[in-house]
Image 1 (cartoon, rainbow, N blue to C red):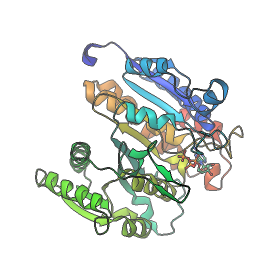
Image 2 (spheres, helix red, strand yellow):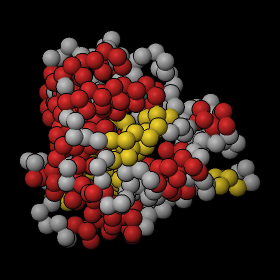
Image 3 (tube, rainbow, N blue to C red):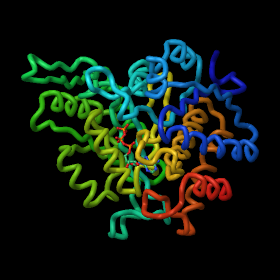
Image 4 (cartoon, rainbow, N blue to C red):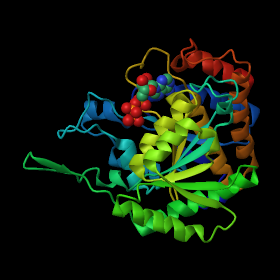
Length: 364
Ligand code: ATP
């Protein structure tokens, strides 16, 4: 059915493992409050189980029927998956969230890094309050494309292959330029930086050449490049100067954790994994087994991921109620922090999942 003619959207909800269940629970509570404020948002929530804990119980982390159910949904709202003590025979952790990414070709991982006014940041420079950039991480190839294909040769040598294709890179860069242009319309600088290692790796020189080809179609965007090592330095030294960066899968994995640290921690960083016909919205963090069950998990990243989902549904389907709902979440989070009295445990404060959820619901 054409999504525009739908009276409601089907959302697959996968809390997954560890604190995934805690932050999704908090977000569904916020969603209830939002629905009473904006009744026009109609979401049918389909609750599904997947993850390392499910694998431990049943031997399967992501069942075929679960994938089939997701196929019939409009979007996925996910917590976190993977547990360090549940591993495959070759030693790797289970990562069904990556299987979902590959299955639906979710090539564009969008990771906004925005300092929330009033929230503590580890940087002393007052300009840290102006941090507002987006990391776009290619999410289906790069060094992660070889997820199941890496080899150990005669116990003496191991190899993983970094794959870049013209097809996926072109779509990734187009998404990146379009997003940069949309941000420019909202007053941002309109600057897109390709982060690579084109001075050393053939694959990265190829990646950069495709970026340059795409840039020719976007003369209004200030397109540039930076090597990944320099980017790691500059993202700490002057992160407020970045607007949008686009990068390979593994570099994006690492730089997004760095970005999350700049704005207070993993619990502040939302994400969206976008493909041509499906999208997964989840906090950038993992299952955080070190704090599970202690009420310490910061749910803000998951709240903001839900806001991204509502915005995506609203924009794709021309539904203003969903855009209003998305904005209401951003404003509630900002207002909850603006008083400077809220300080999550991960930032050295004492506010846990419940206190933060209550403050955001109140601000709504
Ligand atoms: P993955 O590789 O699956 O993304 P990870 O190994 O990067 O996971 P995380 O689970 O993201 O690890 O945890 C990294 C650190 O951040 C841990 O110390 C964890 O407690 C902390 N952390 C992660 N998410 C949150 C959160 N929502 N609130 C508070 N602390 C968090």
